[in-house]
Image (cartoon, rainbow, N blue to C red; front, side):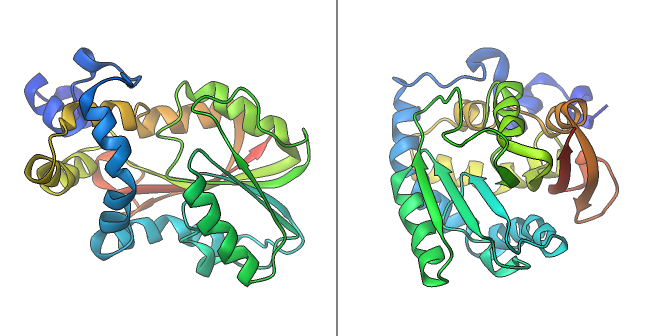
Length: 253
């Protein structure tokens, strides 16, 4: 059981958001959410693509070195600007880009065009019931730092497994959300930045942006797919409290 279960309620709230009060689904008319929607791209660029944030994210991207993408049909949900492209091993036959934000699709496709890799894009609504891809047509689904956002998770994973070929793979990474190291790291960095530079209440946004805890994500993946590989970073001890990211490969049953 993670350490957070033994922490006082007030400390849990500071580290992991006030989930009892605000729930796991965004209140889309809330002023904090509206401000977050406007500023999230700049926050992402400033915090996740340089410094410590980049090091943490790269720890997950390295899982791609262990896969051969040659002649594979790949689908990625939430590609951002493809920050992991330098970690690829092989050249995909087709790369599907699926995101809720058109600006990310454009950035990602530009990178693929530059490498002359065939690509398709699909812009999703806030909630998607089915992926716009033929069932059983994808060799590999890539998902870096997205599963913590998708709620309810099981529904989204059912959609993912539906488009995978028999024996197809889900590869990616998640933050160790719900773990002590992740909670403390956010408390000392992102939370302080929010309070200093915005009117956003981090107790709300943490809950709405990361409704899924890492242990719950891993258990759901194990229930629905075959676990081929899982590793923790930086300490490699298989416990979320002492790590920041978890990278994985799961196979369709």
